[in-house]
Image (cartoon, rainbow, N blue to C red):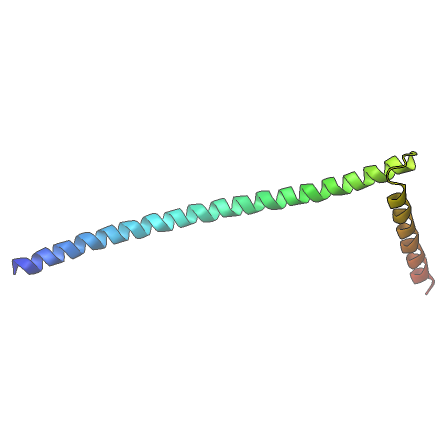
Length: 96
């Protein structure tokens, strides 16, 4: 009979340890999920900032070319031609 009591006590101890470990792991999982959400938000913000900076850089290149720089003249001409085509397309759409 005492062997059964010892086995039950051992099982209870192991069960308590398992429950404590489950609680710890659940808490750890919640913390990691929060960190992941924060990191995802930071990455998204940085990605948006990078896109904005790329657009600003392109705009500055075009402005620099328009002011007389020879470095990006080809790109500026291509951009102007692209804008003209877009304007022509819009006019054609309005005419229909």
